[in-house]
Structures are given as C-alpha cells and as structure tokens.
Length: 267
Image (tube, rainbow, N blue to C red; front, side):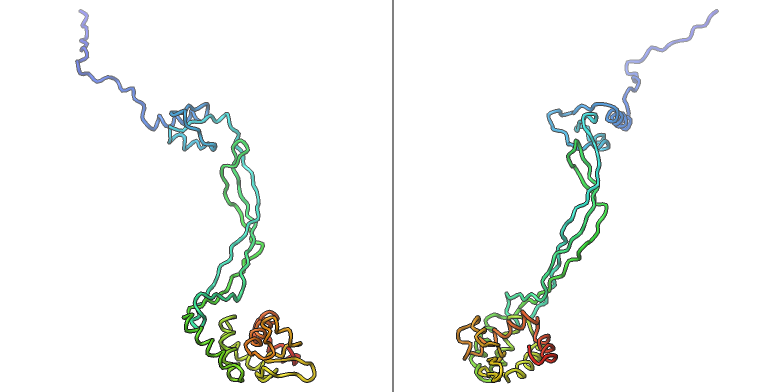
C-alpha cells in the first residue's frame, strides 16, 4: 500500500514569498548602471550638472546623466596672484581723531599658485590648490591713528601759532605741528630742536651772510618757502611747515636729517 503524503493547501492568510530587493542592493545596482551605461533622470526636465560624481548620483536618484556623452580631463596650471598686506595701527591721543599718519606704506606681495583643474568637455568645473611659492613678500603698512579731541587740539595749535615770532613760541608751534602732521613725537622734536638751533637758533629772520640761506630752516634760496606761503620772509609758521616738509621728503625724519648734518655740516 502506497502511502500518500498530505499536502496542506495554503491558508487564506498565507505569507507570499518575499521578492523585495534590499535598499543597499538597489543602490549598488544603480551604481552599476551608472558605471556601465546610460542613466535616465527621475525628473528629466532638470538640466544635469556638468561634473559627474558617480557616488553622488547613487545617493541622489533624481540626478541623471549619461557618462558616455561627456569627456572628463585634468590639467595642471600655475598662476600668479597678489598677496594682500596687513595694516598695523598705533593709537596716539596727542593727534586729532580722524587723522591717520602713514609711517610705512603697505605693498602687496606676489605668489605663484599651482592648481589641479578638472574639466568636463573642455570646460573647467573645479580646481584644487596643490602648490604655492611666494615670490615677493607683502610689506606691512604702519599707521599712527589719532584719538585726541580735535577741538582741543585745534585750540592748542591756534594758541601756539599766536606765540610765534619768538624763539620759544616758534619751538612750541613746531613741536605741535610736526606731531599732528607727521607723527613725530618727543624724540624727533629733540632732533629738530638741535638741528634748527644749529642752523638759525630758531630765528625766523636769520640770514646766512655767505650763502644767503634764510629763515628758521635756512632754506637756500629762501624763496623756495613760497610754496607754503607768500609771507615766507616774515611768518615763522610758513617757514616751519616748509622746513618740516623738506625734511620728511629728503631725510624721512629730523633725526636722520641731524645725522646727515653732523657728517657734512649742512642738510
């Protein structure tokens, strides 16, 4: 007797076989499609980006592209670029606020930068710096920044100007003026005081009998001081302004001018 096995009919609620593909497997499969053939956009109305990042495409299924339709390439380029300089500022309460005196002019530097450039169809889409050589270091700008009360300083300047015509008054005005105009403090005024004492004893009417040099700074000829005022023969303020400007342009500071004077007995 042959015994037949029983076959249970599937129940009404029997669970069907699982045909779902795991999400990770789907992503890997998508990546394989991306690498081997065309990719169709989920939203074909969007313009695809020019650079093809396969990993990004696998993650973002809304991006579509056909790798075979584009040419990818790399190149290395070297370009010269400027390096910005920094500014160092020192605050000075003896100088009127709003006044910046440049003691050293800033200069930009230069550098040669090498990049690796990625291109799609000959068009640059990204670049990465891979090397840098500085060919000229930037020069720091040095500035004295006034923080003093402008009204008070203006009163002090006017008061000192009213005292000019005497040796002490000429010195008092010169000390204030060179600080406000050039940022020359106590040390530089001490050099200027010595220099102009040797030249004219701070007498705005002093005349050199041999050369004809005239005034507090002993301008030669005296009429050069007319660039600061037609009253150069009689006004100590005009002479002081011209003399300080001459020193700044030719020697940079009164102390440098005094050193030159000691070497040659003129400046």
